[in-house]
Amino acid sequence: MRKITADYIYPVNIAPIKNGVVHISDSGEILYVGSLRKGDEEYYKGIICPGFVNVHCHTELSYAKSKIEAGNGIDSFIGELEGLKRSITEEEKIFSIEEALLEMQENGIVAVGDIMNSDLSIGAKSKSSIQFYNFIELFGSQANVTDKVWQKGIELYNETAKPKNIIPHAPYSLSLDLFKKINAFQNNSSTITIHHLESRGEVDYFESASGPMAERFKSWGLKFPEHIPSNKRPLQTIGKYLKNSKRVLLIHNTFIEKSDLDFAKKTFNETYYGLCPNSNLYIENILPAMDVLQSQELNMCIGTDSLASNTSLSILDEIKTLKDNFDISTEELIKWATLNGARALGFESLYGSIEVGKKPGIILIDDELNLLEVLL
Ligand SMILES: [Zn+2]
Image (tube, rainbow, N blue to C red; front, side, top):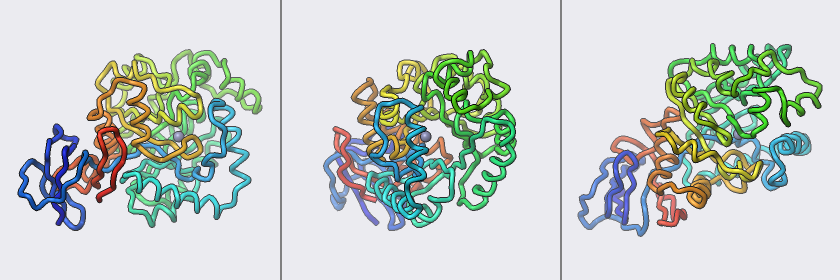
C-alpha cells in the first residue's frame, strides 16, 4: 500500500483537500481519501488529481503527426488526410499508434474514447493499460452505400474489444437510413458520439444547402441526401436518430447556439459536450463557443482529437488552451478532464475521481497545470 500526501488533493467528486492524504492499494484501488496525516506518507509538492479521461481521439490517425499544414480549414484538412492515408505503410501506421498510446499514458491519460474506421489500432490497444471505449465510426451520405457501410461496420464491431459501439461520423456525412440503423443498434447503456458543428459550413448546408460544405458535395459529384436542406440546424435535423442511446457525446461544438443546447436537453437522456480546443485551433483557427456553453450548467468534457490535427495527446495541453482563452477555474477544468469524461464514457465506477473503491490513476501537477509525475 502507498500513502501519499500533497499540498492539495483534488478528489473531484468533493472539494479540494488542503494537505490531504490518499491511501492506495498495490492494485491501484483507493482505500482512503481525507485529511488524516500520520507522518508516514510520501509527500509531494503540488496538486494530486485523478488520471485524465480523453473523450475523443482517433489513435489510428497518429501517422499524420506534423504532416498536415495547420490553419487551412476542414475541407483542406480532409483532402490532405485522404492523400496521406495511401502513402504510408500499415507497419508505420501501427508503430505510430503504439507511440501515441505511450504518449497518452505518459501524459496521465487513463481512459480514451477512440474513434475507429479500421482494425489498425486493435493490437496496440490490447497491449495497453489504458481503458478504451471503442467507437466504430460510420459515414456514407449516399443511400446506395448504406448496406455496404453497415456490413463493414458490423464486421469491425465484431472484431473489436468491449466496451464498444457503432456511431455516426457527423450530421452531414450519413444518409438517413444509416442514421436509422445506428439508432436501432443503441441500447440503454450505450454512449453515442458524433462530431458536431466543427465548421460553420455545416449549418449553411443543413439550413439552405449552400456554403462550402454544399460546394464540396457538388464538387465530388454527390447528390444531397433526402434531408438536405432541412431548413433546421444540424442537431435539430438528425438528433432524433441519436436518442436511443443512454448518453450523447457531442464533439467540438465550435459553432453551437443556445437552441442546440435546448434541443439536446429535451431530446436526449444525458448530453455531454466534448471540447478539443487545440484541434479547433489547428484546423479552423477558432475556439469552441464558450460563451454559449458556459451560459448553462452542462456536462463538459475534454478530448485531444488525433495527432493529425494536434501536436500532442495531452489533456493538460487542452486545459491550458482553455485557461489561456477563457475565464474557467482550474478546479472546474480538472472536473471536465476527469469525472465528466468518465461519466460520458460510462467509466465512472472506476475512473474520474479519487474515491474509495475506484482505480482512477493518480497524477501530480503544479498550480500552473504542468504535469510533474504520473504516480500511478
Ligand atoms: Zn474527431
